[in-house]
Image 1 (cartoon, rainbow, N blue to C red):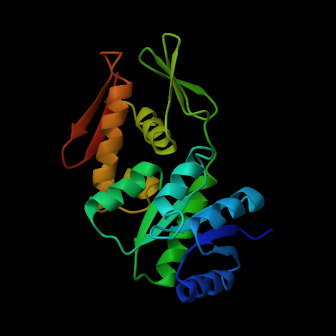
Image 2: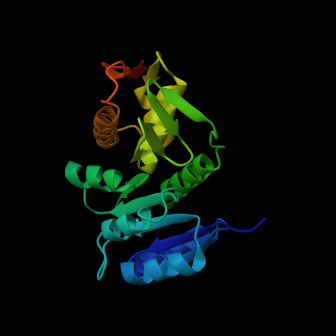
Image 3: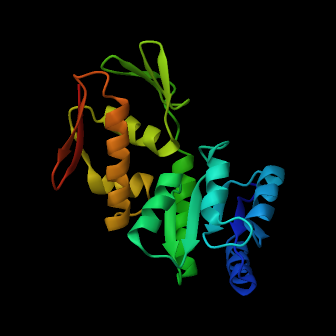
Length: 225
C-alpha cells in the first residue's frame, strides 16, 4: 500500500522538521515547505492527499494559500496550525474551507489523530443520486443546487452539511454529531462556524417557502419541507 502524502507548510525550520520526522515515523510521506509560494508549487507537482498549513507564513500565508487551493480543489482536507486564538481567526479559517484548526503548542499525537480522522472521512463513499429538496434539486457529488434552471455552486462544507440535513429530513440533526463528523471537533469555535454555514444554506434555499432549517435549541437543526 502506498504511503499517504502530506503537504506540510511551516516557516519555523526546527518545528517543521520535528513535525515532518514525527509524521514519517507513522509511515506518512511528508513534503515540507517553508512558505506558501513553495507549498503551492509542490501542491501542483505532487498531488498530496492532505494539507497541514501554518497560518502565519512569509510570502503567502496559510489562509491565502488555502483559498487558492479551495478554488481548484474542494475535497482535499486542510488542517491549519496557528498561534492565533481569537474567535474571528478560527471562524475565518473554517469559512475559507479548512477542515480542522490546531492551536500551537500542540502534541504530535493530537495532530496525528486529527490527520487520520480527516483521511478516514474523505474515504466515505459519496452519494451519486440527485436529491430533491422541495422544488430544488441537489447534485451532491458536483455540489450544485438547481432551482428553475438556475444553478448555485456550494462549498465543500455547505454541500456536506446539506447532505446530512437531507438524509435526516424532518428529524433533528444532532449538533455534536455533525460537528465531530464534519469539523472533527465540537467546541465553541466550530459551533459558531456551523451557525454561519446554516445561515448561508437558508439563503440559498429561500426561493422555496416550504423549506425551513429549524434551530432546535440545545440539540441541533432540522430540515423541513
